Amino acid sequence: GCGGDDGGSGSGGGDDKITLGFSQVGAESGWRTANTKSIQEAAAAEGIDLKFSDAQGKQEKQIEAIRSFITQRVDVIAFSPVVESGWDPVLKEAKDAGIPVILTDRAVDSKDTSLYKTFLGSDFVEEGKKAGDWLAKEYQGKSDPVNIVELQGTPGAAPAIDRKTGFEEVIKTDPKFKIVASQTGKFERTSGKQTMETFLQSVKDIDVLYAHNDDMGLGAIEAIEAAGKKPGTDIKIITVDAVKDGMTALSENKINFIVECSPLLGPQLMQLVKKVKNSEEVPTRILTEETTFTPEQAKAALPDRKY
Ligand code: GZL
Image (cartoon, rainbow, N blue to C red; front, side):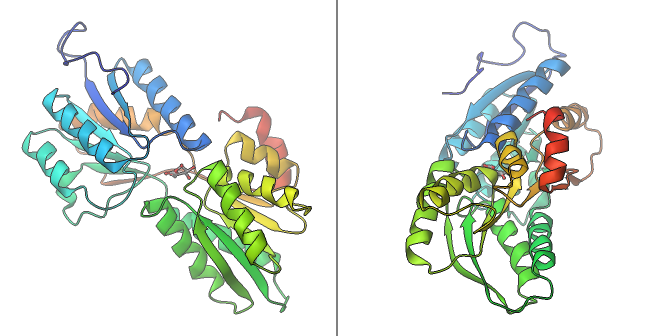
């Protein structure tokens, strides 16, 4: 059931306490757990009553949670949509109930942008382009074919769709780059390992792995080492997120390049919740600040990494 669900808002802390209903995707990756921690800590710091629900990766559970927040008459609803599509009906119910909605982390493909107040999160197409740009530089001036295998995130999820789009936009400019295999690893370490095992059996010579998140890249590293190959040397690896385990592998040259995707959205989200609760104007799109890391930069950054 919903974590932190103390039943009904307005109980205890007086009626000026804001109640936020948050529906989280699940706990599929290191990024996700860091994101959850950021949201829970920021709500506590701001004295916001957080009703938190973990959907275990199922859209119908997110829809259920949003319906329950509407019934409880929370002040604001926020969520990270596990997939892009299928949200209009429940978002219309929230709108009809007069409860404002904030999108965090992932976007929805609804045409009706009146269904939510703002979208706070990364530009995943840009993240894919940064990955492609690194690869283009790495193989600049070379003409031999470069065989790429791709571990995609959750099917239908905005980061999976957009990271693929951005990456392909860059590599399609040079015919030596070929994605010879591409399958989902569901953003999970175990599935990433299993899918990489099938790639290693079915693809003759793999030059590069592009994984849509660190966790799948880390699973792939286990498969690559089990096959007697050196990750980062025999097979170059690019991932996205820059969570601690990924940055550690990068600092050990098992990953070659990481595009950061910051999960620390909690503080910005709580500022938006307060504004939206008071019917203040907020920008319709707030972009997360983030960068990229090489092995050297990872070594320098690791000691201060919060996640
Ligand atoms: C990106 C986020 C993705 C991460 C994955 O903002 O939605 O989901 O890249 C996580 O690690 O599972």
